[in-house]
Length: 279
Image (cartoon, rainbow, N blue to C red; front, side):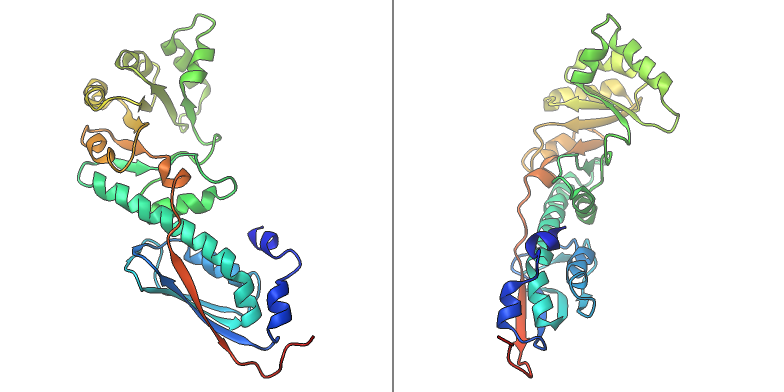
């Protein structure tokens, strides 16, 4: 879809300026340090335009690299290489940016036992790629879609309890409908909500926008009866302290919704063609 969007009727510039038999060699070079992700997507962008283009990805996803590192090489028709270049770079720059940011969060939580996980705050249509990039950076994935697990948030619980049901009874009614393999998570925003939610049989309890002191108290109160997830106000300046409270999971929307694409460039060398372009 991205290739069709970028060149719906071909690359007019390359078709008119470059001879059909012109060749190009290119190198994907890091302009800054980071963590690599998106090698397969990078290669696919060229091969979907021209199966004869040769792409060699030199480092596996998840590899840390320094500025100046060559990450992949490309060789083939100059027209095909230049037509594919922007889309290939758009993907690999964004995915490597996600992997790099994720690795920073993971490093700050190291030694605590807390997992860094993403959220559903992904670019529409690109979730499978962006969540792969999170794993490349050492993070983990939350539920992939609304179909994968039950997550009862404040709005859901408000609707459920309008008829006079308690939160506990409402969650027990939900649990009774679920297969034993289906995960049930519920969100709370106060310490006094923890016991009623645990009594509802949840597998994970999300402590949303809790202070550090309340996170520690919440972990102590749950006492292993459910997985404890911290969410809200998580950034590079707060994640280490949040991890130190003893929570099991830290969900970070910023991994995908606020990431900066990494600066990677495609250095292209054009080789002389045997014949000039046809007017």
